[in-house]
Image (tube, rainbow, N blue to C red):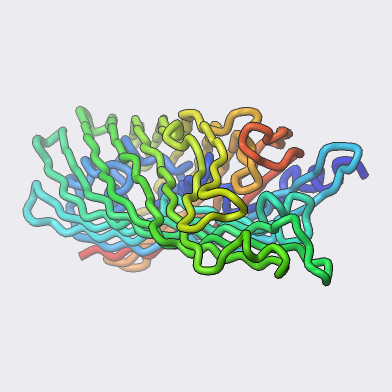
Length: 410
């Protein structure tokens, strides 16, 4: 029975935090998911607002895109021997989405608005697993709202920039290792709303009809929680150590991303794309909560994270079978930012391998559909978690992510 759950997960399970390195969500466009989530060095339609605002100036039609993905995921855990206890997450289906709208002010200047979800995590371990004093469940959401302008400087060169306002929240629950008379453990819940500011900028260059290149930068966004609610459910004998009405402040950095992309169109029907991204995960040094009242003898709690900057390598292709039908495929490798000794059950991260397929179909001259399917398999990883206050053991994550989008041009 050794490795029972881990072996079963060899290609079949999933969790919301299994979709990308750290807590990043790389699901910004159904067409681009089908192409391995490439898009920095090619036209991507309205989703250029996300992938490269510099390419948005080349759009010849106004357009609106609405899309959503469904993340079905699980993480398996096995404790170190001799105990070897096993657990499996029961996380809800994640639904990251995107809304893009682009309008041409004139032939060279375009205005756009993007609303999308580039970061998030939803992990539910439950109250019975052996690591419950580290984490029961975690929900992290971030929605980016990005008004954008893009200008075509020449026939071959475009630039663009967008302002980002991010809203979201965090809910973290963990058990407290003190039982009441009924033998039930106490519980702590931290819940609060967050917001932050940032920007997205890009340059797009197409020297020939067959070749294009792009460079984009999405800045770091610091999500700040002020006055969140800290609620404790404990035995009456220790309730004085966990006061009611406690609030907390916290800050979580959403890292910057610098991407270089290349597009090559060997024929009118075939588009090939390659992207390389560097994600500034080193901004995430620790997870700290500052309390308004003294909790169990301390005014704050803090655990080290010390993430490292990491790279993502992507390839993708699209082949237009006919005027209205396109087939897509892609793959990527997303390197983990989590160092040895820092693995935690909130994000039991490892190198991710992604494979994707997709299809696009024109229903009418103005309406088209994009469908995608992405499979993610993270490497099995064993870690002590000693440097971060994590839970020692072996983790394995897999995710299946279908998606659908509707495009309207006018």
